[in-house]
View (cartoon, rainbow, N blue to C red):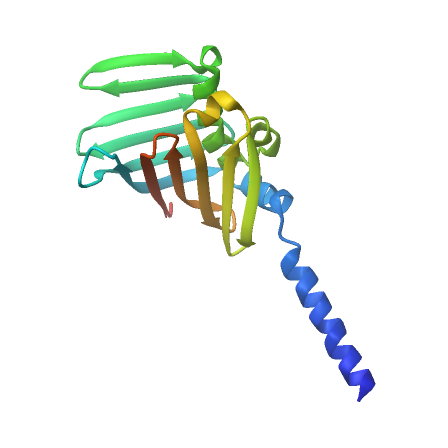
Length: 189
């Protein structure tokens, strides 16, 4: 009877250790192995001055480690391309390019997305404290700004997903406005 009890306790300890083993290092490794892909998105932006969220839909393409293209199709066509540190925006036949290296707060915000998608823990920890909950099949990574200038813009960024797929990114701005980006990967043949 004691041997059976000890055996059960041993198995329980192994199971607990296995489930507790999922950590930020493993998540970043899983994300780093994902080399990109295409997805559809629905983004809802909640503003204090509006009764309803502003909803946008479109497509995204990510190519590891540092190219992200976001094509908004509704309500208004817009293309944003992040290629290394250059952000290009095209809307209504007008084009704008910004070198994010000259905009440290904007670069830190962009790196929250790029760092998560590429599994670059060092890039994330440069500007954020990281908190992970869940397991490999359903995880939530919370990024809290560690720099006062960034914290004056963004209160928190919450990224959730499964395995090596980011599925939801939520930004809570310091002023209380927020955006929720739902990502639905598109299988390519």
